[in-house]
Length: 187
Image (cartoon, rainbow, N blue to C red; front, side, top):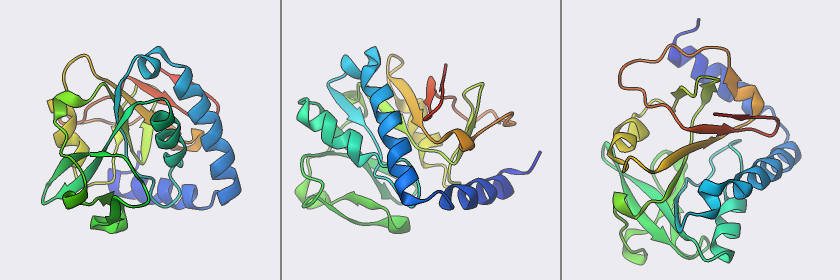
């Protein structure tokens, strides 16, 4: 098995080759599956991430959730941790932040608490069918996930090509509760 760094590079490079039209098509399928889940329907607030590069386009989900009256919480990198903020407007309340990812503008957004989260949508480079996750290497979600209240479900959205046979997880690695791809749902 490749080490995590090599695996990250390989999977991201393969994902980056997916044409943008296919990313959008696959994202719409993933989003349709997510919004049918009881965990989503019953939630009032979502922790979600803004898409970066060739990730599934979570803005589709953000807009749908906002239209349904759900509160949206986005992270902002602050040193080695993530700060959380409520977002109401994707066009006016975000700026390019750390790593080139769009993040909440602190002065324009209300801070959110970890206890405000009903459902957590988690990013990652790759996953396995046992719900293990490899992130982008910064450890931001590895530090955030253990702080979530126990009843908050953690759902990963990714493309099927990001699900591999086996990830050799360490003690610090937190599993997700579900993985949704354009082809499958793993739980």
